[in-house]
Length: 157
Image 1: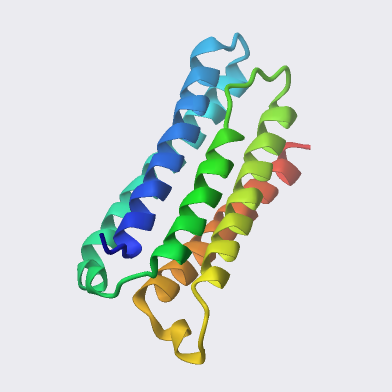
Image 2 (image 1 turned 180 degrees about the vertical axis):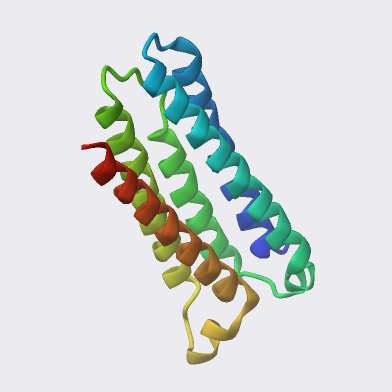
């Protein structure tokens, strides 16, 4: 079976769905109104990311013709699976804890994306593949998300 960026995007969507469930559980289980509100905002952000990945899949359906070598896909798949193991339900006593958790998740996710992108590079021309370019877009989007959370943390103090 040949793998493409579409397969990677499908795995990234599952990751976003998993962290979304964590934020939903936080919103539904907390007694603190501020934590509930921010959790619901984070849920909406995860829903936006899922739509973003779905849109990228549609836009790059031609990229499905550019295959990713099995050994590269296997390693990327392993990295995503290992990353997903770290996503567990948590309970937060303060808004600061929740925001720091969200920031840590986003930064780890960005690191994962950069690692994945690096593994796609074997030759000079590999940085022109659809998969490489798509991951570049996603990393840029993730950086904006990190900046937004950092801004929110600063404004909350």
